[in-house]
Image 1 (cartoon, rainbow, N blue to C red):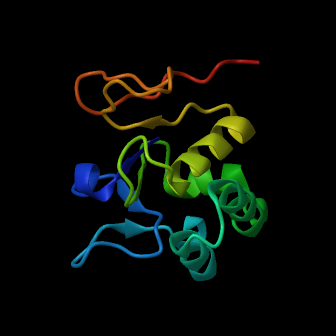
Image 2: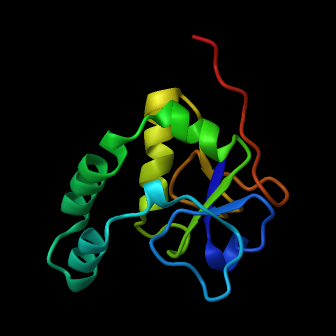
Length: 136
């Protein structure tokens, strides 16, 4: 599983939109349960809440109500989760990636990131692969 945005990976055959809105004409797969609630989006965009509050609320209002193993199974291990923000910008897709990493021990990388501040983000000839899960 990887994450990306519509501009970079919208035509990827395994792309899954996890945003509240999608590009006009989007015909790809949509996974609404991971989309942020409208009110949370509106409050974030208006500056009513900061990133810390957004993270707290997204986790409480969305992620806490879902089973990470079931969501991962629904999406499939080769899904590319998409929203709007550019790589490196604050976005909920990376919160979803962290959720999978913490809950399932699965490393979820951003597609094709060069020079990311996150040491886990590495460029590997196009789309990134997911390293094998560690046996605990």
